[in-house]
Length: 102
Image 1 (tube, helix red, strand yellow):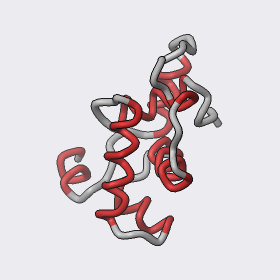
Image 2 (cartoon, helix red, strand yellow):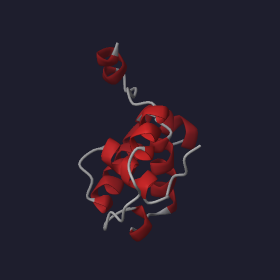
Image 3 (cartoon, rainbow, N blue to C red):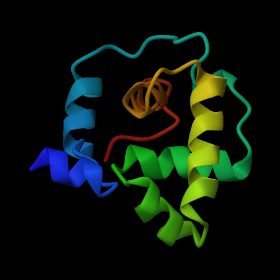
Image 4 (cartoon, rainbow, N blue to C red):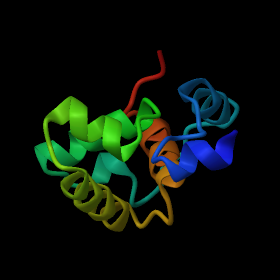
């Protein structure tokens, strides 16, 4: 039930779905993609964990941070990329080689 999953802070996007999206497209220079953006170490960690399909709560637990702190890092990452949402940020990161396909 995606509605309940999202309502409780979960993610309905699975890493395999993201990989499928990315592998079906040629890598292209995104201009503002991760390869050209300077992330803080923490923003880079958060983006990589977003790429693994983790929710804000899961990222917070993994990095021993508060959920609001994770939200701040996610917002900063989206702004630096010029991405409208998490999905677009993760796709940019995969296309730029910032996150490797497993």
